View 1: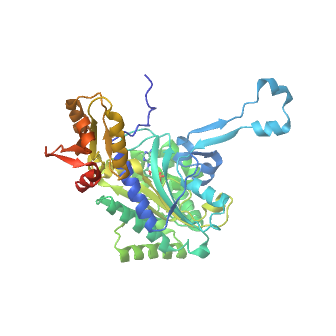
View 2 (view 1 turned 90 degrees about the horizontal axis):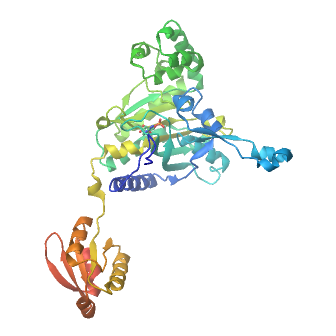
Length: 439
Ligand code: AMP
């Protein structure tokens, strides 16, 4: 039997009701902050990720699903390929997106979205990373993210944007009934600070790097900041003693970080400072953050994000400072107190056609009731009454509606409340109202 690939999974009902519950809250909350939805392709040019996320990150160096997409030159033509053909058929390296910020910024540049007044965008969709699967960590997982991006003249560089995005996240989590979250905040500075910091890190790592894992030895040379991504337990005491970026922030970065904190305090969003937090992607500048949730266990980060002021330029676009985040939707759903049963809308009524020729009449009634926004499950005339009752109960319907010859003649139908056991005869014209009244 062929099974779902390791690290991927089927999202089945009733759990999908929880996903819909989350997504509809997300759309409502983001709308209130004037974000609009963007959908970018699931695969992109590989260079988009290596240039933005960074060659030395775990994502790019180990976890991407990348392939050469080669147009096949038909054999019969192989000898007669013109230069145009060969350009057309030449391969392109493609990658399943491991994250969505790069795609959004690419689209922002490609479509000149700023000119169209689009600078607050959100997305919901699958991402792909070849990580070791475990609870809360999948190879296809879903992210909900948002980005605020635009020219500095539009205020996109302002600490007010950072604070607004963080406050929006707190609002969303509250709205979803997730209470025990923890916001960890850091500033990873700007390229200015990074040069001095990297230098200091290299110096501090030089005498100890031989005691560290192979990845860290490599990072020491190529991108020392990434040493903070290391999860190897033996390396942690060494990493604990390394200099921190907070000691290297220049005056504008320090002032920006202070301002973000001041606004958060004023709107009452709690946070803790964590100067080890550098996030596993290279494009971040200044504000970096993560929300964690106690109940999630080892994979306790529900979401992460930060500012990426140089990203657009590094992808060949105009200067467009920005800030964004990605929520792990799989983990968000796991953190809900709500149960799928609690958010699922069960059928309001089960229609039971009774006897030959009744399917047509039942279908007509179902159509009328559904037009009144009722959830209707439709049985079949081949069912005996007992089987219809069993099916109605199994579907979790509130009512069963009997459609037999006598009912059709009288144009009034037997409606039974399955929980209370009460049965009444209701004229066709009053059915919808009667059933709606019970909702
Ligand atoms: P990142 O894009 O790495 O900053 O991740 C943002 C959020 O996506 C994390 O906080 C997780 O909640 C979620 N996430 C990242 N990788 C995975 C994965 N492999 N499986 C499930 N969720 C993930």
